[in-house]
Length: 440
Image 1 (cartoon, rainbow, N blue to C red):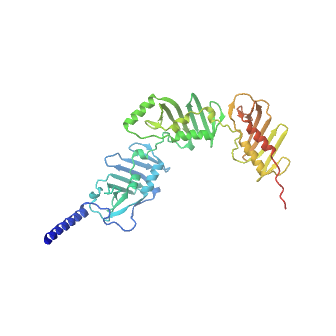
Image 2: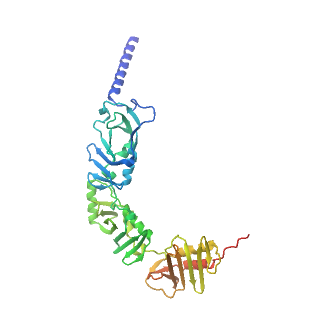
Image 3: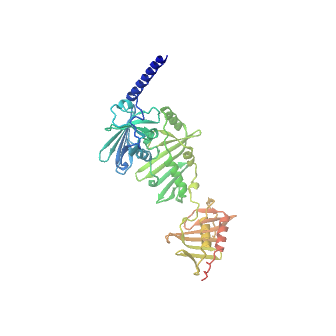
């Protein structure tokens, strides 16, 4: 019995030895010749020197990107397309300083066992000095938490963490510019919006928008910027060919919501938006196809002309005025700023807090709505000089029923004001006081 047990033990031991030999020579192990130290870098490149990327997937299309003289990336294959600069930058950030999970083999002689003889993914990088680097990605590791990789010309085999592989494994749809209107917001000088049975045109002078059509009007720049944000944020959604056909059909049969034209020095791009049932669909003049649009984009086109008009009476905003002059019936107030101090018309230094309170009330003057008539003899006028005297604004105010009507000097637009705003302005003017005399 003891002899038979000894024989069984020898057989088991031999089998284990054979399995271990086969595993070491035929199955790549993540621990084979693994370094006990910090895993070495796979690639160390200067991201700024990279000017070309080639991505080849086994059985898939090749994607090629190049960087122009201005430092912007563009897709040149499989067809010319704009590139998503942020997506490309994220990929390059990982690629230029690529860490391994571990070193598997220092001098591999059989790349086939790692899937590296016919890699599933190849990423070619070209630097501006024409030096190239080819990253080869093979099979996934047995635990599926990474993949085997090597650099062409280097016999070392590494494992690459799965999240790093995901960062590099990109398709043309991942890297292309997905904006339906690929324009930089600060380069847009005109917007023409056809919606709600009206045509509104906006023009920009530096950072300020004006309404040009249907007639020249002061614009609420924040509202125009919000419209512009919705237009430039409109992005394509990738889908199957069947989804694309359904989207195109829904667009064709949908009701038109708006047509927007954005103009830069380079030309004009157009976006048409339609609604079918509860969904919005968009078609661009510079991007092939029809795409679903978000509700946020779609609902941004239902505003009327008055929603884009500037309801504020004064344009000095949060810059400090230089002079303020108010006439309210028989009362008159004159304020001039000298350095950090405010002075009255008769040369008295004024209490800064009371002056700032008055300035706030002037800033608060805002229309509840616009009127076509009703303005009569003004009972109040407010003049504000700002921007070192380069801007002078005068507003005339008259009583109107239970409220007030205001107009800016030399402008035809009439603004209806809540009586509470005028009462607050009058009270703040009455509360102006001289600065306390400091005791020595």
